[in-house]
Image (cartoon, rainbow, N blue to C red; front, side, top):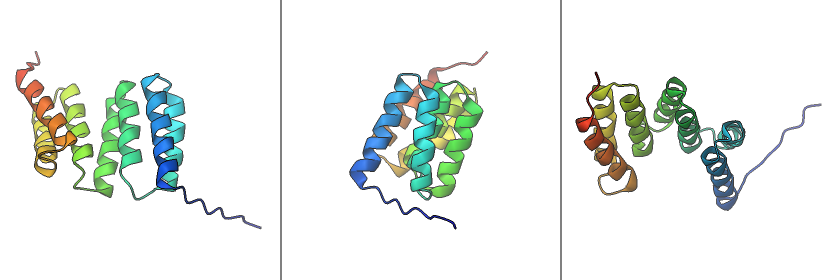
Length: 134
């Protein structure tokens, strides 16, 4: 006999889980953050935020290729995610790909010109223009 679970967390419960994952990430407990976010991703398979946050965990852990893969997956789920574009641009910058960084940062600004992700992207574009890779 197969048991099927029907779990439908409230928005407050989902926010609590995301906050717990962010706290773990900031404490550099990357595995705990991954575990929480993988659970949230299972609960919300069509939402890009858990995927983006998994990318931020990998980015902070220095795993830029894994971060990029999560951000790309987030953009598959929502191609208009300024959040994912901003973080993907940041990842390209850290991988020393200024053109790739500019592309995604410009997309983020276009999608969120007055919001926090557009603001983040503008600051990263300024940094992109200032950095010289030898």
